[in-house]
Image (tube, rainbow, N blue to C red):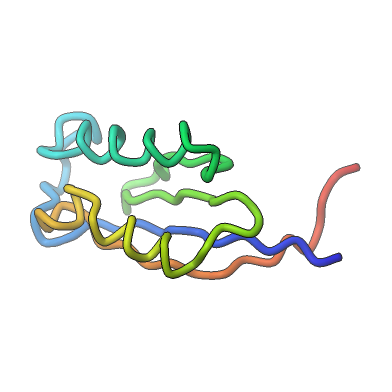
Length: 99
């Protein structure tokens, strides 16, 4: 059986301050709190920031998560609404896995 996850990919939005550390960006704490709700509801497998200069990050939803629900959740993120981040929801097929 194919293992397909919905993934939310975040990239910096127009309000992102280039060169400012991640946790000094206005709205990052609210962003984390928003996704913590999804984690606590059992709908998020893992998530976190990219550590390179480009910024952004991704959240991997549990297998079988409703894509439309995830899109609505991603768009309701305070960091997306403020313009700090952009969010794109994509389907991801696990093609390889260590047993």
